[in-house]
Image (cartoon, rainbow, N blue to C red; front, side):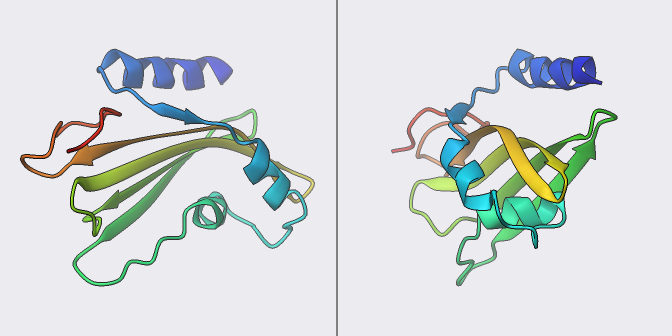
Length: 127
């Protein structure tokens, strides 16, 4: 299954999609005693809990479980209330053991608003 995870990440990279890596150390400290975080969706919501406010934001969370117990969690927040960034994607790889989650990887990228930069997922600054 680890091979499938690596293949999946290689496919994302091969499509030209770049990501900004985020060190999960501080987040792992935050969740180390949080036994109420039951699902992968709960975990992502603890990590990313925006104020959706006005407008028409769309927040989706998808998960893919592997036999080794790891879970690939993908959050997409479209319709951001931001002048330059239209959508944000966060990908997390985590595993729950003995009621506690451990996050192994967090990465993110975004799409710019029309006329503000790249329209595909990437990490170049939006203007």
